[in-house]
Image 1 (cartoon, rainbow, N blue to C red):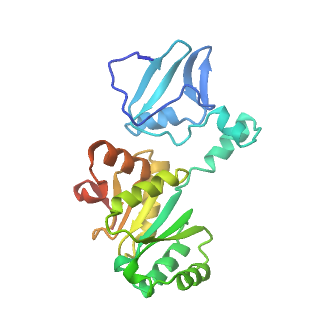
Image 2: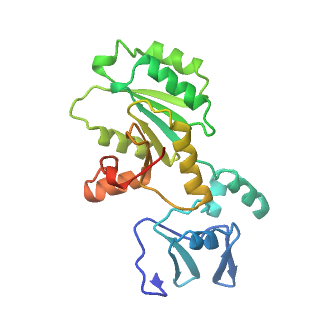
Image 3: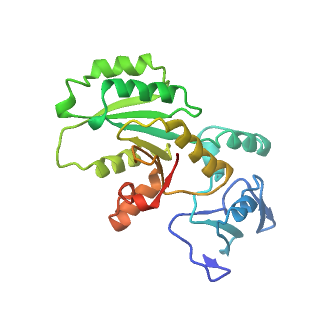
Length: 256
């Protein structure tokens, strides 16, 4: 593939070429049926005009487009939808999907209950819950007690308890492996201590991603007790440069 302009395609990008929502005049893409090309341009995202031997098309640079779907995506799910039905269906998915990852090292049972209550009343609920406990906290956070607490909190999502049994396994390695095995959830909300700003952090992330079509590295409260971030970005930065974005507090966007 060759670019029509002297612009560099970043490792993270989205090619519109095979997207079902790309509008073509013969072999040249002219628009997006979700109007995302224009919206990305307005948000300051770089849109590259590119071509290969088959088509001329746009590339959303430095972004994973929120609307990208191929025909095979629907086929693999056994869905036969008209383009109008596909547009309606995809717009209904424009909502933050995240894993709630709670590190129990510095959180008491009482604080965990408060976190569950806050999340239960949040505008956007988690798609999955992971509780990270340690060998020395097993008696405090025994599985049956955690199971009862979760079920009584009516979070209505998948959940699991992860126990750190190997002291040599780092937290960032665990987070990275969690991202790799939970690819359908794009974001992670990692909580190390309680903050009463959880709902504000979740809503701000949703606004930035789906309303403003912009990005952030990490959204956090001032004390960095809760950090919301894109899993793909976390793994990419760590594996390409060895940098843990959760430690780069200068790059955080603070919610207050």
